[in-house]
Image: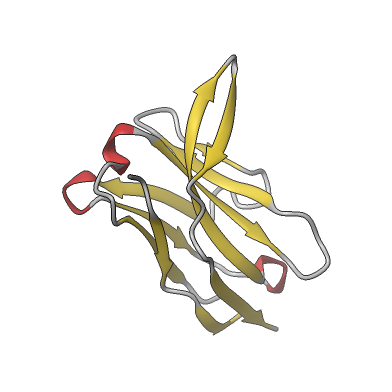
Length: 119
């Protein structure tokens, strides 16, 4: 059973870096694509990055600043976030990504981890 758990959030200043972790406690994440999403206050949840093997996907707003990677031995997907901006503030979630009928669908959401970037 896939069960995601996020960690690594916190309060940082603009320009700082932070690395989030998403661990599949069901130990099956290496078989699936995994995506990171974020939700800012008052806004819809948006995808940030997605990884299976290749290519990886990044939202335009984070390209060049964020890097998604995975360690299958640890059943963990990471999101390295550099040059953080106040607009990056939000709750970050990871989810399993399944490619069905020509599009990705997402399930097994974690509880989220809060990232706050002060100016």
